[in-house]
Length: 72
Image (cartoon, rainbow, N blue to C red; front, side):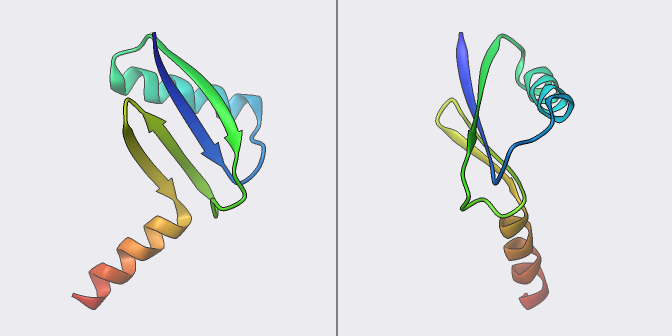
């Protein structure tokens, strides 16, 4: 079974966690074991570590991408 670690700045509701796991699992072909880690360095949003890839949907990363887009 493949494993994914979801990192957030704080705890999330069980409903949000289940929706996130379900959506990610559907996108990646299912059969994934999820775990949740609270990481205070994450500023809003979430980061998923899965199969050696980092999927960064944190607010800090989104703001950085927006700034890069504006600067270009």
